[in-house]
Image (cartoon, rainbow, N blue to C red; front, side):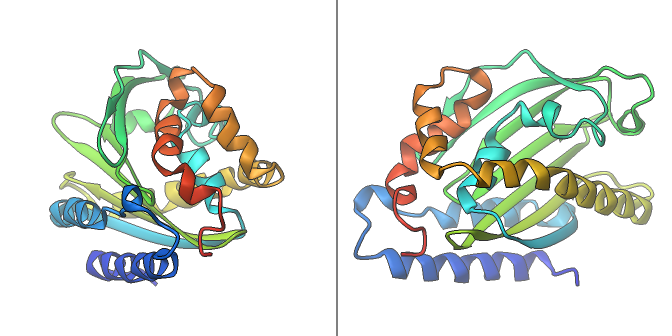
Length: 240
């Protein structure tokens, strides 16, 4: 069942407020959850809302965040759906109080890639960490059009999380067909992700944290920032 954006915002806010209450006695002043910023961003995009999906996945929350914040996964994990997409020309990372953003170039190597229908062969993409639970991917398409994907990752326990995918676009033509294509593409990428996520889940979660501390790789800058800001929340059960 497809929910409205207002329902998604309300559900996320209510659920994360519950997490905040459970952690009240364990959090210090540096671990405030800036949910208002995320809600404002989602409401700002509301008029361009195109589709939303939600999944309950038997995967630890940290594994999903690692996956979404790792730029190279677009090349490695989505070889079928993205067909030879390459990451290049990673721009300067910009930190914010609650996360950060990074811009990078994506190139469609194959001339038969179906993505060429709505985007140029070389496009700048921006990935933003809004807060502990929210990540946004902004993709330029033809003209001044854009596709924005907001991922809300809500932990349900140590080994399970709920993933909300909201896609926004200012593409005005053939919208019903565009929505069907986006639904299919979104489902396909989630299916592709599962094998990789299960491999991450078999690792000690602390190893993902330590790998971030020891990594100087540009493609992992956002995950490093995530660890810098929220490590204290990750070293204990997220719902503890």
